[in-house]
Length: 40
Image (cartoon, rainbow, N blue to C red; front, side, top):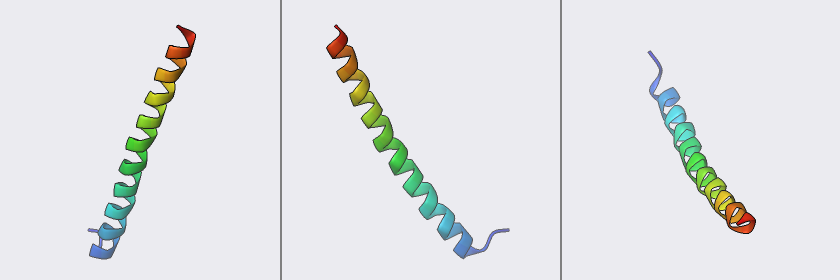
């Protein structure tokens, strides 16, 4: 089983990844809306 320090490092990495994913998804959605708006 993983050490508690490994688990803390994992949780920190996972938290950073999910935050980056959420902001990246939001940025892509804004870009898609802008492109669709410019095309139409």
